[in-house]
Image 1 (cartoon, one colour):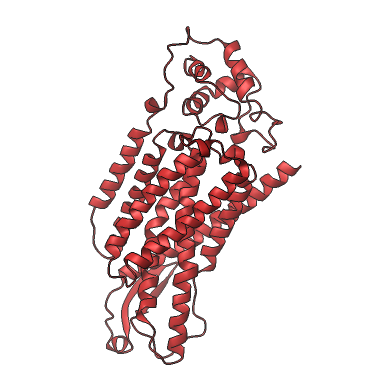
Image 2 (cartoon, helix red, strand yellow; image 1 turned 60 degrees about the vertical axis):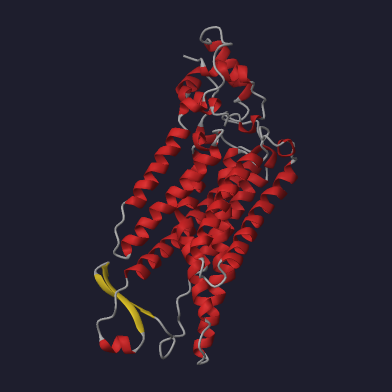
Length: 400
């Protein structure tokens, strides 16, 4: 019953997380599009009122006229629209999911027994949990300090962008060395998502509140608040597509089980940022296909790096011919059925993972390709909790 309750809470949290993320990202993309699609106002009275740009659009059977003021309008309305709860809800629900799915059973989902660093391979569950939390907090602190130290007045944002890109390469590498591949991709995405939410909480919204307060008091707002909010919003824009990909990557073991998983991750992060740049420029009336072309090139490079041929075990030299049904069944029973059964023995599951039960030969044979792939990639058994040997992996690979 406890496992069922956890699964049901997981379902509800995941639903909330996806809905909040769609709302947040959708609104973010809309405002970036709006900001880059503005044109100089045609009416003289609008220009006199301080209107910086406007955009006419049609949607849902009606026409919309959006205007952006370069300075405060003569009178600010009391019902200003604020965008922040979607960001906070996305992060809070995502963190709750991480606790339920990973931190409840860290020895299984976080500890990487194959880490090249002995201290990481030998971590206890609570140590892995603390390290994961420190990883998230440290990622935000480093990113925030880079912004404050490199471009505090928003006059060196190009250099800052390079520094943040280098930071993400380091984060990708460290995460794959310290945690399991699945957790590493998620935590790298969570570092970016944490920075996005923290940007909203610590910089964007407080700066906007100070600006509104000054305007209502008849004072000139501090221009740095607007510039700083813009800087962090721009970063959030380019984090968006990589974060979405990293968050859905846990469904695809061939990506994060590769020995060069951190390279694959970096390629996807940069590809997402470049593709996002194409749309940002397109809304500003500039079509530059080089950005998506390079982005697609990076995705193809990731495809090549993670190709199945690179995931094969050391070879089948030690296997004397293809294994028979009895050998395969014995290995599945020894290493897989604890979880992949209708009534799993493992406490973390109330049903077979991904719906795959391997309790008879027909069920095993029906998932032959998937079994060989996840065993070759070392994704399964998860964390190698059942100590599958390389020789046993070779037997699975030789299965015909």
